[in-house]
Image (cartoon, rainbow over all chains, first blue to last red; front, side, top):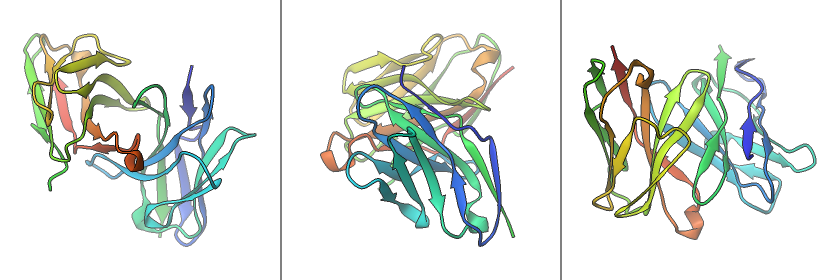
Length: 112
Length: 115
């Protein structure tokens, strides 16, 4: 079965430090991978996606993600965290025609 | 351009009551989805639609029904609400356009409590 795993419920980082939010996937065939962000009391917002091409994908708000096929990972990264980056982050995988499977989410807390 | 809107934002139901959640999108998207979000479980797909007049079951369809009579609207119905349906419900839509393939746009959510 196709699935994504986010092994960390919460990630804590100080403002200005680099951040990484981890995601691993399981799929037969080529993976199509996404990151979404959810701010409090809001719907999910698209950050970035990997369909094909460069393993380093750049997205909104200075985020990027690194696709690693050998490690079946798609970790979200940002060189310098902001307090305003504090939110819930979801990794997702295309699983079937136009359907996404989401991970359980990772809460990012950036302290001043 | 409002994107994806959901009505209502909040609702409290008693066990056994029925209700309909409305989702509307103004992006002319072909595909629409209903998810529920529960703590520690991420988003789970309830039902989806690949076009006007078509619907299909997702991961957790039991207790819900849907209809898509118009391309821009996707309705989620609960015929007899149960406490297990207490959740936050999100609607989403996506396009078949190659540039936006698989990218889903989400509404703000409906918080439903069943007592």
